[in-house]
Image (tube, rainbow, N blue to C red; front, top):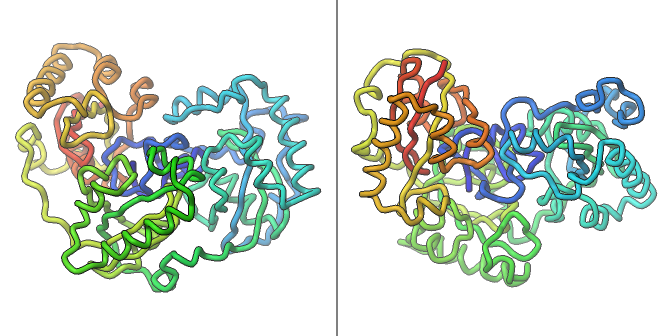
Length: 444
């Protein structure tokens, strides 16, 4: 499920891309809701073992010689083996992610020992990276076989970016982030898949915002794609289906929403024909392609979900206000340029973020539920308790009762931003996004 700007799917990437922001943000990689999504605010960036091992020493195993280099590549293609340890679990939980069960069984010293062993094997035999990832890596999406494209400013932990851009091709090193140790190998620029729209990707970007729809088709080596159809499909079968769908999407009068409902394996958009919105330059493959399409043009690219057949569409008309939205508040001038808010996301069968409760809820039941939640909050019930009981946002974020910083340019759905900045402190309002209705309380 695509939550906010930038891509989205892996533990590693999420930390730099604000993936823990409330569901309702602009774009995504057909991803969220996937096993590798960790969410994040903040820093995610320790960049060196000092974050975990303040005293330095045996646990500080970063490749300092590489990190100290002044020669920086413009772009780098890397694969990595992520190895974590039990003390990192609190960070994963706060970031809406799940730590690998193997990491729960080891302390940092064991993680450091294993990371150094993997690095030694990788330096001795660089082409063993795939085997080492399959055996040891705790980032599910590292197992796709595709390298990560890194450039300055990429939405990855800064320490990871720093190492990736300083490694020489064929060289390996280690860096520590809040996720654990990253044993990282820089490889050559990959040869594009012949089915990808390489001609379109060579173009200059169009001016954002860009609106687009997509059909995700996966195969058995795409762990981010949990659709049973993808798990039972080979890459060759996915290629055949993707070519057929590309032709269907390009046909005159093609109904993209209908094709999405029938074929797409992105759980966030397949049933509602949702239109994604890209606000700025992005390193996410799907958004990179979308930014280069002309209106009504269709292209195809590989992403973490598999093949993404993407059609750029005209800007959609603004939807009519929902009867439960706080229209009077939305008509106000902004109260602030930065608000800290907490929210409860609730949906219904026709519009939801994938929560099972929402999938079986009627609109009539929602119309009754939202005022009940607001009434309980206004009567003094802790908002955090209501978040835990009712919110259908990312589970870990709900459990933490986390507040979100909202600014005019925050990578969130515009309705969410508009209401948040118009609320007074301790005031509660309701707004609708592509994920459902957000009951928002401004806390600062």
